[in-house]
Length: 58
Image (cartoon, rainbow, N blue to C red):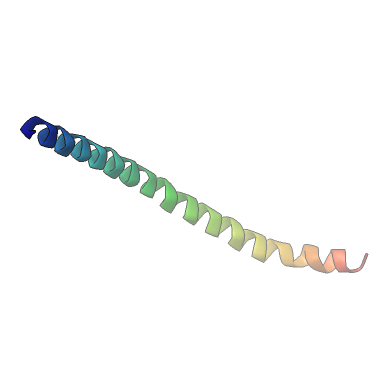
């Protein structure tokens, strides 16, 4: 019974370690993606205003 408990604790510990590493790695990618997306939307908002007025005349 003791070894089952130790094994379960070890499995949970390894799972948390893997999930923590994934979250840590993906958080940086998420931040960079959010910044790039924000800059893209800002660029489209600044440059896209003249395109909308040209399309409205059609």
